[in-house]
Length: 281
Ligand SMILES: Cc1cc2nc3c(=O)[nH]c(=O)nc-3n(C[C@H](O)[C@H](O)[C@H](O)COP(=O)(O)OP(=O)(O)OC[C@H]3O[C@@H](n4cnc5c(N)ncnc54)[C@H](O)[C@@H]3O)c2cc1C
Ligand code: FES
Image (cartoon, rainbow, N blue to C red; front, side):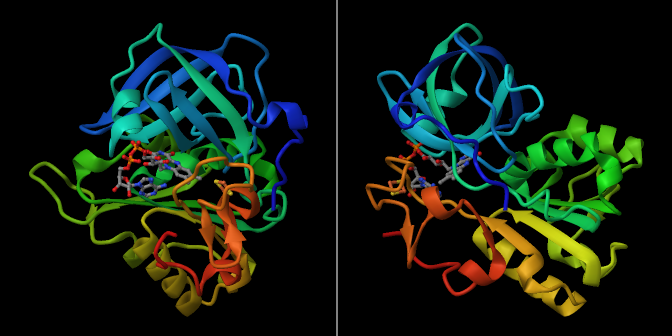
């Protein structure tokens, strides 16, 4: 598992100012916001999250969705579901927000070296795995096959379409996109993302899988991978629960015996299989 870079204790709860440089509309309710720090950039590892603060409104946990090689341009991809995320969706270039972090355990990219890397993303779940895809492509020779399986409810719910087009053309990564229901003009595959798992070429005995999306989708992904013969210990998921402190002290993110902020948000399947779908505390 990728370990978070050590932050000085005094920095753990300190929010720093970042200026919005670009806002990219991904879908009707999802934007990607690129920000630049007013001070020194802070490194993150793929899979980590930040606490993003809209002054006067509040804070939300949001995964980094940008390239970890360029921490001076940090991105978060946000679906508007409530007060803070709606305010984030309404930000304009030039606005200042606060960010503290990064927090948590990231994707196990080092452990996946020499193996097939399979990434299964549902909807906005492509955002937290995007830094892992970019990092893997930057060191492409360290992995065997790389396959990306993306599902969305409909074509208009697909995020990072430019990336999907670029990666498909790139051919160093095997990209498969499917939608639950098609609209006129869609010529791609139709069906839930788990229907791709039996047919995509990878070696189940030598594959490490990263998956992110709704918990139901991750549950069925885990089942489909097990049927394909993938060792559950090689399947990693990232979980979301309400967060407050993000440093393992308040208990808001507790799920059974684990604190998601401190022990996750990335977990190996056997660590959380019994907990998936449990109600938040
Ligand atoms: C580690 C982690 C990474 C995350 N990464 C992203 C990301 O990259 N992009 C993104 O859009 N969101 C992400 N989230 C979810 C995001 O934190 C919540 O959507 C946000 O806190 C909601 O705040 P709000 O004030 O807008 O809405 P609220 O008014 O607090 O909540 C609105 C609705 O969303 C539900 N909700 C609140 N928090 C969560 C949550 N954590 N998971 C599921 N439902 C929730 C509430 O129950 C309520 O129904 C992540 C959460 C965690 C824990
Ligand atoms: S958010 Fe406070 S313990 Fe995890």
